[in-house]
Length: 107
Image 1 (cartoon, rainbow, N blue to C red):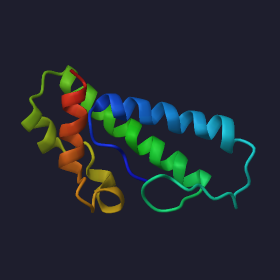
Image 2 (image 1 turned 90 degrees about the vertical axis):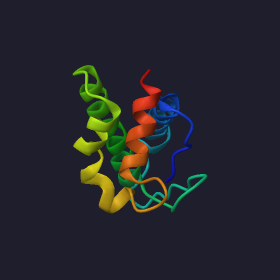
Image 3 (image 1 turned 180 degrees about the vertical axis):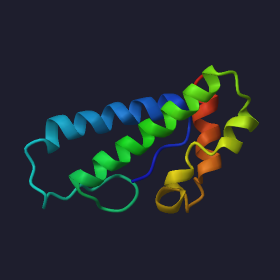
Image 4 (image 1 turned 45 degrees about the horizontal axis):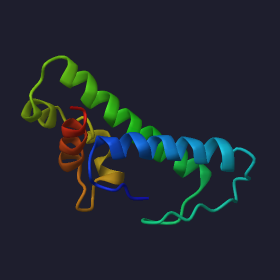
């Protein structure tokens, strides 16, 4: 499951879309239901929920640090995506890149 890389608006809209998918389409699904994303590997309802939670957690961490007045470099150094790097940050969108993307999109 991959995230388009334009801005935090994309993160916000992606979270909204995933939430809607989970609530509307996957709520009555079975554990065997397969989710086929436009990009990334095939997944399950549980993986969609995990992905949504990961995006929301990183967004919330970056927003909190920014609200505290931290600079971009300080936020990157705090590694708000660090707990997810092993699973989600191994491609060209690593934790540092994603943190910068979210930061810049927060305005």
